[in-house]
Amino acid sequence: MSFIEARELRKTYTPKGAEPVHALDGLDLSVPQGTITAILGPNGAGKTTAVKVLTTLIVPDSGSATIGGIDVVARPEAIRPIIGVSGQYAAVDENLTGFENLDMVGRLYHLGAKASRARARELIELFELSEAQNRPVKGFSGGMRRRIDLAGALVTRPSVLFLDEPTTGLDPRSRLGMWDIIRSLVDGGTTVLLTTQYLEEADQLADDISVIDTGKVIAKGTADELKASVGGQRVELNLVTADDVVDAVEVLRRFGTVEPAISNDSRTVTVSVESGPEALQLVLGELNVRNVALFDAGMRRPTLDDVFLRLTGHIATTEPGEDTDEADAGARKKTSA
Ligand SMILES: Nc1ncnc2c1ncn2[C@@H]1O[C@H](COP(=O)(O)OP(=O)(O)OP(=O)(O)O)[C@@H](O)[C@H]1O
Ligand SMILES: [Mg+2]
Image 1 (cartoon, protein in one colour):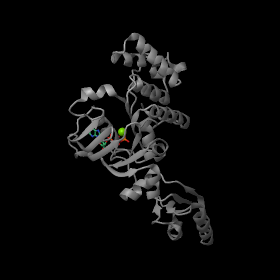
Image 2 (cartoon, protein in one colour; image 1 turned 30 degrees about the vertical axis):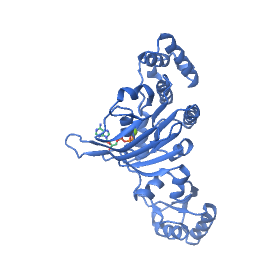
Image 3 (cartoon, rainbow, N blue to C red; image 1 turned 45 degrees about the horizontal axis):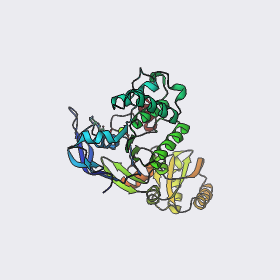
């Protein structure tokens, strides 16, 4: 049996005056000891709900989950001492300094004053927060908050760590730093379950990936397996005018391995191909003959959207009522810690 096991987890929210939401709809997970598993999914897929169930913050309607053989629902008090959690929104005391936050966590866990201070100093060092350690957290940047929050989850040296979107909202350099820290934790024997919206992140970190949508696993495998399932490379064209979309689709269809996908504004057309460089050259030649004007053309690797499109027939959508500008809405939502 794996270290973290979830079977058929279900959780339905019924907000007043609204339709019930099946946040978890029969979710299965298994994470072997000492490995990283990523739960990959779009906004509203059920990632945070899954983490909340596994970390005893909420109780599922049905299904079961165990960590190290201990039942999460029946014995939450036995789970809490062995796990660490860094939630989607940093849980820090705004008025305390970075050092005081970590010291406080140690004391809440009854490590004692001396050991708490020593552990706080160690973590400040590990997370390169020395310069900020004596400033109140309310003046911290988003990246610093994430680091102090993860540091807080590590005070007790938990053997299992849950990270809910640990790098959403971080700049590229901070993201790389966070990846290094996560990798070194796993090298030291920690078992990690993390959630992410980025295939790239799952690719970099995870031994195994569970892609989830509407509360259940829709695909599972290594990053290479998932990418292979959606076609290794893609050719993407950005058209100057949507009038050329029919021509562009006809051309891509001849060189692609699947039906080309068209963006909502009919200006971007994408298809997966067997050999990117070869297909791109042929496509450009053919478009030239047809006088199709391009803003941009290129090869790219599959994104989470490609995986979704292939697996579900629809792209990863925002939640009803959310801003339709997904990237923008995501950025706003995620950076406000
Ligand atoms: N307390 C709640 N009350 C009502 N609905 C909820 C509640 N918590 C979550 N939901 C709904 O359950 C679904 C899953 O939410 P969840 O937060 O688990 O998604 P997520 O994958 O973490 O999304 P995100 O990437 O935006 O963090 C969503 O449709 C959400 O609106
Ligand atoms: Mg979430």
